Amino acid sequence: MNIFLGGFWFLCILCAFLYLYTRSTLSSVNNVNFNQFQRSYLMVYLLAMAGDWLQGPHVYALYENYGMTTHQIDKLFVAGFGSSMMVGTIVGSFADRYGRKTNCVLYGVLYGLACVTKHFNNFWILMLGRLLGGTATSILYSAFESWLIFEHNKRNFEPELLSNIFSNAVLGNSLVAIIAGLVAQYFADMFGFVAPFDLSMGVLTVMIVITIFTWPENYGNQSSDLSSSFKKAITSIRTDPKVLCLGLIQSLFEGSMYIFVLEWTPALTPHTLPVAKNPVILRNLLEDKMTEDGHRGSIPHGHIFAAFMVAIMIGSSIFKLLTKYTSVESFMRIVLLTSALALLTPIFFAGNQTVVFIGFLVFEACVGIFWPSLGTMRGKYVPEETRATIMNFFRIPLNLIVIIILLQDLSMSVIFRCCAVFLLIAAMCQQWLYSLYRELPKPLDELKDGHKLGQEEKVPLKEVEGDMII
Image (tube, rainbow, N blue to C red; front, side, top):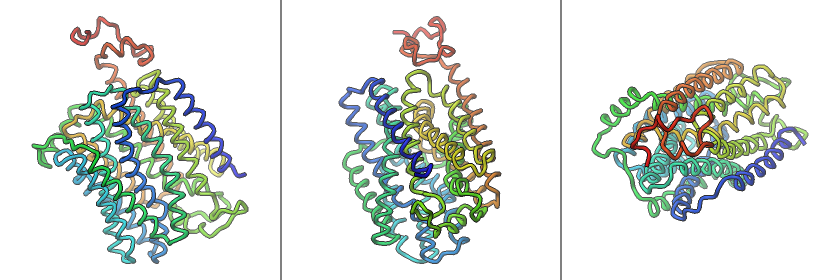
């Protein structure tokens, strides 16, 4: 058994233990209305994510099968990030004025049309598909969360329950990713590389129908046009340092994460095998090599991907445990610092598969903590009327980071150093946010609940405004 498969099974056992431990340690939610609301959101959200995961594994393989050159494929990938940065930011911002539910439906339509373009062996039609897909991705990572937070607050559910939804969403998303990868591979083997995209189109259609008939519509500021929304978003970012901190953390962490997705293959590839600076080229060079373990390629990509997803699930469980003892603003400082150290392993332990693999698993666990943490903090600090606009605004530097790295002919070592620096800056932004959080007046329920605040975070009752005490 190789270290990757062994690591996967070990993580499965650890994940099961943590899941059962959190269920026994944390009190269950008995609010029937909340549980129904959570199921309604997760059903749509996980179908939306399934539509995305079904496409991911075979995008490059399909382009290559159509005879596209490496340069053409690079252009297509850059176009996807570029459209997410520019067009996606504008379309995603429509959610605040024209409706978050409508924007979620638009996500399904755009991504479904992107799937249709995969049937054509034509560079410009495929380019159109990348533009549609990039735009849809911006909606996926803004409109769904914006709809959730508005509905959660409108129904007067406890604020703490929002983090529970985010944690379960990360857990479910990891499971969906593993299942989608297996199903996509089966359909690709049976019917060709286009089949997973047709399956994705079917899943997205189901998502659209369920969204239309089960979700109510909600808005940000309907009276504002696009320019006004952008002005208000910029004003919020300029005048509220907490919003600025969250945006910088989002851009730096997610930018590093997307770069990591492109770089983990060459980082885990033995140095005795051909090495190319471009990770896409390297993956292509190694596709036809069959190892003694019976998998295709120099490393078992499927086992490694599955292990990464389980590590994210572990991170989701750790998030739930951490929120019991301290604030999100506090523990995220350590999480971001840990993620930076984890991505230094391919630099200081280059060629050591075991150490680098462990470092990458730690990083993925940090990803599992990051997603629900960021959603929880955005729910607290990002203003409702321009929530989707602000979230999409910070996808501009996020995608810009990825595009710049993709377009440079950088060595793997330099790329991971850049990622580590980005994450260290994110940790400093989180420290800034934590100091701002400490200055905020604490509501009485938090003051009474000692485990919610660390010893250093407790505020004397006499310092709390009188109108906050009932």
